[in-house]
Length: 538
Image 1: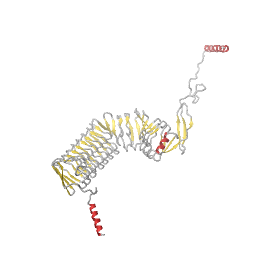
Image 2: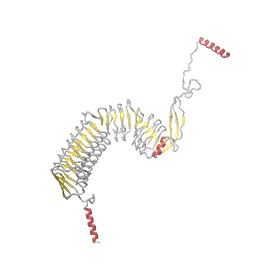
Image 3: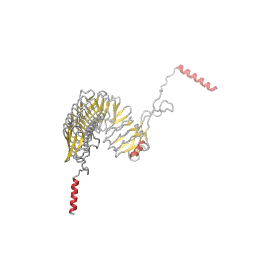
Image 4: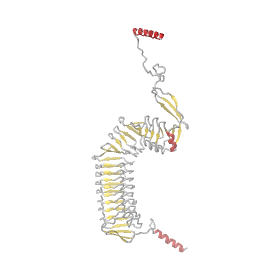
C-alpha cells in the first residue's frame, strides 16, 4: 500500500509540473538561430534573442517559438531590428516581453494569443503589424513609441486595454485596430493622425468620449460603432469623409460638435450635418432637427432612447429607412404644416406620396388615408396595447409591430392584402380580429398567432349621396364589436323623373317654369289642335 501511495504521489507531482496546455514538452533547444545574425537561448522559461539585424521570415506555425507552452518571458536584446511574422503566435503562457531600442518593425501576428500584460513599444518602431497583439486578453497597458507610422489591422483587437494614446507620427489606425477592447475608457488621438480605419474602435463599450483632431481626414465605416457608453463627439476641421455607421448605436450620446472651420461638415442643435447636401448623418438624445436639413440619413437617430419629441421641419425632403428606429421613449411626432413631402396625424409620421406610415409611438392612432404601415414603424413601442388598422391599408411591412410586448389587440381590415415577416414577433399575448376569409387569417395560422374572426357586416344606417352610413360586425369568439363608416355614395336615383334624388331628395335640376305670354299660349293652343287632327287621320 505504501508503495502504491508513493507512486501515486510521484505521478501527481509530475502532472502538476506539466503546463495546462497539454503534455507537450518544449521543442526548443537550449540555443539556436532565428536570423542570419540573430540567435536565441532558452533557459528557465526565458527566451533571449540577441544578435544583429532581422529575424527570419516565417509563415504560420513555422516559427520555432510558435505555439510553445513553456515560453513565459521573452527578452529581445539591442541589435535586433524586427520581430518577425508569427514569431510568438499562440504562445499562450508568454506573459512578459522586453523590446530593444533598435527595434524597427513588429510583424503580423507576432504576439497574437499571448498572455502578455504590458507592452512598451520603443521609439524607433515604425510599424505594428496586422494582428500583432490581437486577442492578448490580459494586455491592459500599452505605450506606443513616437515613431510609429502604421498601426495594422486588428493590431490590438480584443485586448484588456483601458487607455491608449496614438502618437502624432501615426498616419493610419488600421481596420479593427482596437475593436472589441471592452475595457477601453480613454482614447487620445494626437494631432497628426490622418486616417481612422473601418471598425477601428468598434464595440469599445466603455469609451465615453472621443475628440477627432484637425489632422484627421477620414473616419472609416463603423469606426466607433456600438460604443455604448459614448456621450460626446468632437470633430476637427480637417475631416473630409465620415464612413457609414461611423458613430451609430451610441444610445448615451448627448453632444455632437464640429469645428466651425470644417468645410465639409457642421453641427447644429447636436446634429452632424453634411454641408453640401444638407444631409443629417447623426443625431443624439439632445438633438433637434434644424430647419434647412433636406435629408435625414438612415439610422441617424438609431437607439436615441431619451428622445421624446420628434419634429420634422418644412425643409426635409427625404427620411431614410429606420432613421428613428428604437427611439423607444418617443411620445410626440410633428411635421411642419408647410412640408410638401410629409405630414403628421394621430402622432404618426406619414409620407404624402405613398401614404406610408413611417413612424408611430405608444399613443398613436392610425389615421384614415394610410395605405402602408412601414417597416419597423412601431417597433419596440412597449406601452402600445391596442391598434385599429383603418380600412384602406393594403400592406403591413416587416417588423411593423416587432417587440410591442404589451400589444394585446389588433384589428386588421379586409383591405390588407400583404403582411410581411415578423410583424408581431414579441407580442406574445396578442389576439388579432379579422374576417374569416382574409389574408390576416392565413398569416396568423402561419405564425401561430391567436385570432378571432368576425360575423358578416350589418348595416346600421344606409349611406346616401350626401351622408355616410354606418355598419357593425361582432366577433364570433368574444364580445368585441366593431363599427365602421359606409362611404357616401356618388349615385343619385330619379326613377320618377321628378328632378329629385329618390335616395336623398337632392334637387337634381331646376323646377322653375317661366310664365308664358298671351301669344305663346295661343300658339301652344293651335299646335295642340294640329297634333290632334294628325293623330285622328293617321
